[in-house]
Amino acid sequence: MDGVNRSGVTWCVGVALSLTVLGTAQGVLAADWVPSKPIRLILPYAPGGTTDLIARILAGPLGSDLGQQIVIDNRGGGGGVIAMSMIAHAQPDGYTMGIPSLSAHAANATLLRKSLPYDTEKGFQPVSFIGESSLVLIVPPSSPAQSLEQLISRARETGKPVTFASGGIGLAAHIAGELVKLQAKGTNMTHVAYKGGGPATAAAMSGEVDMTFAPVGSVLSFVRAGKVRAIAVASQKRSAKLPGTATMIESGFPGFVMADSWGMLAPAGLPEGPARRFYKALTTALKNADVAKRLDDQGVDIAPSTPEELRRYIATEIKKYRDVIVAANIRVE
View (tube, rainbow, N blue to C red):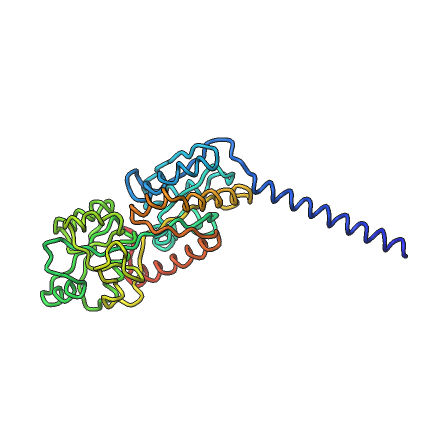
């Protein structure tokens, strides 16, 4: 009996040591994963937009850290669904990643839930949140409204609908406009969809529409040049870039916080090695002073996160967008 006990102890100790060595070896392999070919970074929009600019700012430092070229692959169309489908169905081997607009990704989960070729949450492995740009409400410089309250009051007095532009159904600017309509009960408001945020902003500049929401960074130069007027920012506190502009909350819209946001996603099932390596490379890049300045110039507030924090953020955004989409009865035609 004593011999059995000793041999049992010896066996247990041997197994424990083996598992410890194996676990350590796996940890080392995970940390030391090195890509052996270029990495494709899929974007759901055409070149020139904020998502594209973010990706190109990050591509250099990411490529240097990983030792491979980052190839930007712009796959616009379908409200982002084409690109997200490509990411979801790619081999989870570390050679295909994506940077979506998380607001559009969240909206599509409800707007297109019956036809999406992927699961919005389970089809992707989160890597890290990148950052966000709060939406700002802008009006034409010719508008007599100096505040959102004045804009709404004037519409109620005249009986004319307030027209608001967006770059497409379900995008952040559209959802924000519909949320104003829901909260400003009794105000007649009409959505006008354009093919992209640029044309929507141009419509607000020219007076073709009464207002639109846009990321702070994308319209800051127009505000400073007097081509549009900023009357409210959809952030928790006032923007450092527009300190004289009230928040939507200050303007009488409780809890009104809306932003365009971005994160890096990989196909679900990405092994631990590349997952940890990409997380390390991306968070390191976001801490780089030059990268931080260039993103700040684009109006992006950097906020790297853990993969689990990004997963929870996406789930929260899906619920927030779903609540507005259902309440406003928004449908894709």
